[in-house]
Image 1 (cartoon, rainbow, N blue to C red):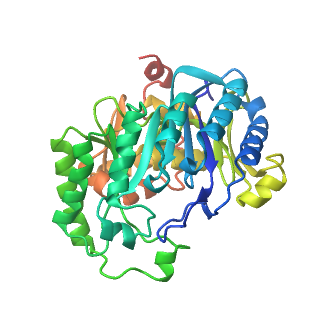
Image 2 (image 1 turned 60 degrees about the vertical axis):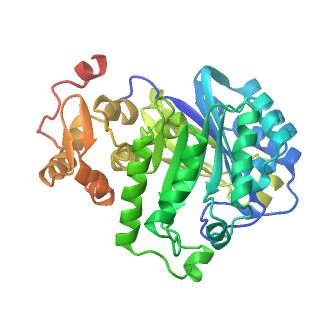
Image 3 (image 1 turned 90 degrees about the vertical axis):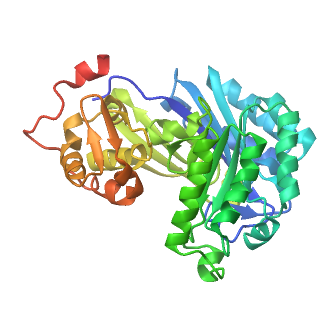
Length: 401
């Protein structure tokens, strides 16, 4: 049973790009002409479908992702933000993130985004090395990446994330470290540092690039880069997320802690807790932008699913175990409505394998568990709640500590 609803965020999907990158498996679509006004109107119509589910709840975070949201003009983002403010209750310290690519960066637009209320910018740099960028099919070069960061700072952004990849074709350990060093030298508040992976249904999957590093080389790159990040004050708090003190991405933390979020836009997903009904639902939107626009955002929900106990348990642990420092034990009950005893079979097995430590207060992956996260997460797939083996003394006692 739920005592209350978890924190609530909003994800807004803007699905268009100048060019589809060969490694990208996101719902993004190449287009030279973007119907900004029509799409913003459809987004706000779409949101109306979820409003009855979240009356009275404050929005803690917003993330505008894509695609390439910075292809939208400042005027379009202002129109979107004005509409959202009129329909939703914004928390006083709301975090509003928008993704941007250097190839679409424009100083005037950056100023307009900031004036519209966006207070966190995530720039998809991926690399500062021009050869790497060409291999990745990016539409910008290293100098444009540097310029985008400088423009963001000049526009007033005091909270910036840089996306950076390692494990790139023909990349050495020194190459990866040098690339990361250029990012660190700029002084962003947050760095997302992740390995290039070849995903199904991508161009790279059908035509893999040559000279991909093997697992040992990628591991060396990761270790070297993690040491570099730590030495410069960037604390790892999730698998690929590093930040300066108190600069974590609150929107993503809400995902990893199994909080709630509305999802609007073509292909967006949302998860909403209905505490009064003691259930959690997922809603999925129409994936194709053309069909989404034809309905003007109305009727965009293609599926709604109520999560069962196994779904709740596994999805919670799938996300929460990504947090390197672990999570409060009470969070499981708070955000799933399930007894903490439900976790016992998987936790005991994980502890016996040296993958996790836990007590009344906290559940934390060990260093070994964090290195073998897929194996650890799988231990909670299909687990059933035990009938007679108490784990915590009292869920209520933990909640009120």
